[in-house]
Image (cartoon, rainbow, N blue to C red; front, side):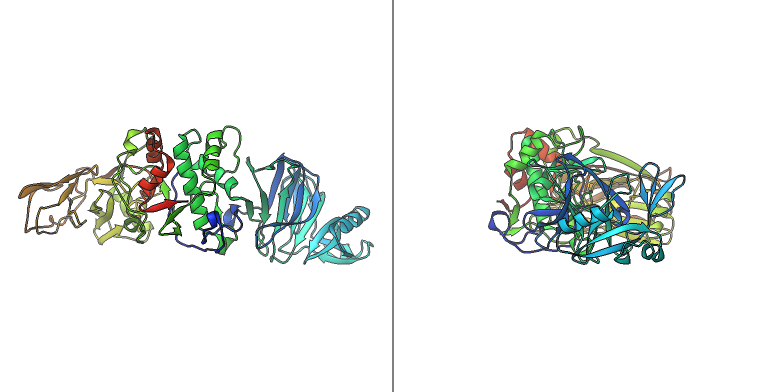
Length: 561
């Protein structure tokens, strides 16, 4: 459910939802990267779930599909052209598999001079080859040979050609029967549009069903990216039940639908570098299409999308670009500026009275680190301070979330601010992490007093007056100081705090501030604490609030239209 802040924005201006400008989605069509970079595929299969057959073609700059040809096959595979090996189970690879296999060489005989796909397909059937669209022209290719000489000796006429490093072959899955070949030097990507035969097509890919079509960009010599190309509302239906439980109250799901729609319209995180708008993971928004079995959109989640169709969040008459959200805030959301360093008018932190009124699983956490573990984690991330002797929250925000964390070591001191306060604790090696911005560190050596203006005294500083000052406890509770004097409890004992008195720093530590050399981080919440709390939205819906009220609580000064 957690989603990170996105920094890069690439906006294509067009008249979109409600006639308002500034959406990153062209013609209400979204491109979702299902596989790319390290997850790109040598061969990718499709199988009709609803419908029969596919059209071959490409998506233009307007994201409309341009058809070139068609097949009635219901299970097809798109594979990086070149020398292809198929093992006994029908799996394609670029290397010789163990055991028995069949191979398809990269050399072919090419016959030219066809004005349409139909002409090329007819000629291919007669010659025992397949139709192809190569460099914007229809041709026929015959045979899969291991060398130019073998192709030239085939006696089929035409000329010997080799599939290039940007080509894509389409085969009948688990066979060497080639149906189509596409290669425009990387300028265009092969597009495949399932045929629903009058119904809304649904297609299996890697265990999930998807609406819309698919695109297969291929860089020179690389594997295939797999991109799902579909209508905006269908995309939102594939996000809502995976970012929020599909059985949750309708109003919460409606709020999530508006957030998901706004997010994809306001961002195109991967468009410039990868050629698609958003990925399908928590790095963007979790997207699983039409799902599989019980792990699928529900009638309620689909209804939430339909009920809010076209609605997005606006701030000062501009489409919101960071409709961010998180699982739970643990008691308070946070200013985007305090987490990511950028002031955003609609991302303002506030105490959340709603979230605690519903059941939030795993909302409290406690994770213990040894001094050696913290020393190693910091060192691995390039922030070595030697042996960690002290670790403490050195500043809280006015709503009680963490603003700064300080590590004191034998070789120096390092303070982290913003989201790094929690991410610095993450370690895949130790399988430990801090899950929110709302926590305290037991075993550290400092106490904290917070003023109403957000100025903290963490072992040093001056309070001109106690008027409006607050004390932040370890569990994030805020208490307003009253009268002319107060006492602040620190790891070193109790210190009197009065107006016009400087709070002096405790003595430098020579070791961890506890007896067993460990630091325990205890907190509540799950996520970055910015924007909408998903469990808070659930609680508000259970209390009878409608989706607009939910969004207007978690995002400051917005309109929904």
